[in-house]
Each structure stands twice: as structure tokens, then as C-alpha cells.
Length: 276
Image (tube, rainbow, N blue to C red; front, side):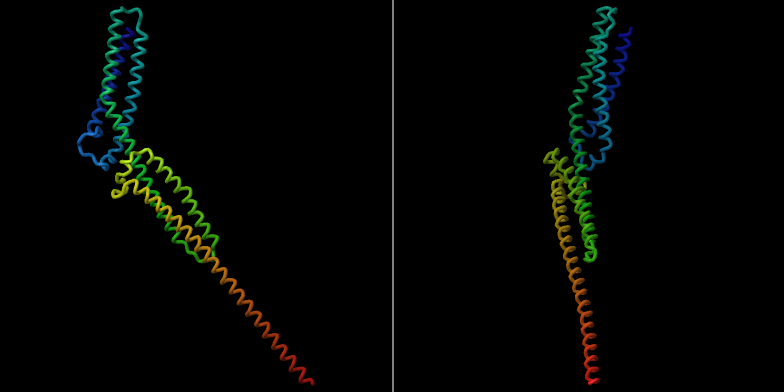
């Protein structure tokens, strides 16, 4: 009786898995099996939540099938020795038949499901790279505006250099890390995917966008270098004029002293002549 109950539970579990496999198969056939139905990249991007659900369902079914096989093995291994050989053979055949049927169903759908999973992974990578490229390019533009907005008066060179140092650190740390993350993902993508237009810039491929980012970062580096040189120049000019002003003031003071000394000398001479 115990063996029959276990077989009954196994059959119930099999029906649940079969229903899940059928639903997965319908999902693959409808949207992701590479059929001739038109499917633009934008449409696939909009289907992303459904694809995410598909992945969860796929992994759940795989786990359930593994559990089903384990249950089949446990049932065959623990058959009640007190029941007749005929009944034992019938139960074993029923278990084997259901195991084979389950394997057949999963084999039929697994290839298409794996293909869908691979395309989902590639779609995620494309969207991630496209998004990171757009964010990095925007960040470069923001840093460029900060550099160009600097008022290089020459009076606060230390403050100006500190601002430029902070921007340089953003280039060397933040932008460098973003570029490395982007390159890491792109290395795992096919060349054809890299050459296709990105989702954030329909007129440019991911490769073009990456090259644009590289050029933009290098241009920003040169701009920071140029502005740093300007800051030093303005500081030197300000310092020079400061020294000049100081020299002029000292010359003026010296002239006044000389003039006063000359006046005192004239007065002394006139007094001496008058006494004579």
C-alpha cells in the first residue's frame, strides 16, 4: 500500500511538472523560438520582464525534474518486499515509463529553452552595456562643463588646482572603472552584437559608442591638462603683477624719502648761508 501511495504521489508530481513544461513550451513557441514572426529589438526589450519570469520558470522546472528523478530512484529502491513480484514489476515499469516520458518532454523543449536563455543573456548584456555607455558619456560631459566653468583668476590657484585634481580623480577612478566594466561585458559578446545599433543610440553601434567614450575621456584629459597649465600661467602673471606693484610702491616710497631728504638739505644750506 505504501508503494502504491508513493507511486500515486509521483504521478501527481509528474502532472505538475508536465503542466509547467507545457506552459514553458507555449512561451517559447509564442515569443522566443526564433520563428519567422517579426520581432524587433525594441519589442524584445519591452518583453524583458516576461523573459525574466521565463528564466525563473526554466530553473524551477529543472530543479523539479531533478527532484522527480530522485523520487523515482527512491521509490524503486524502497519497494515493499512483502508485495508480489508481479506487482513490484508493474510498479517498476510504471516508474520507468514516467521517467522516460518526462525525459522526452524535457528534451523536446530544452533546446529551444536554452536558446531563449542565451538570447536573454545577450539582451541583458546589450542593454547593460548600452546603458553604461550612455551614463559614462553623460558623466564625461558633466565633468567637461565643470572644467570649462572654472574661473581662472590666478588669485586662488590652490583652490582651482584642487578642483582640477578632483576632476582628474573622477577620470582616473570612476570613469576608468566604468570603462573596465563595459569592456568586460563586451568581451563576452559576439562581434555581430557589438556592431549592431545600441538601444540608447539607434544610429550608432556599441562599438562606435565605446570608441566615442574613449575619445571623449582622452579629450577631457587634455582639457584638464590645458586648464591646469592656464591656472599656473594666470597664477604666475598675478604673482608677477603683485611683485611689480610692490616694487612700484617701494620706488614711490624711496622717491618720497629722497625728495624729503633733498628738501631738508636745501633748508640746511640756506640756514648756513644766512648765518654767514
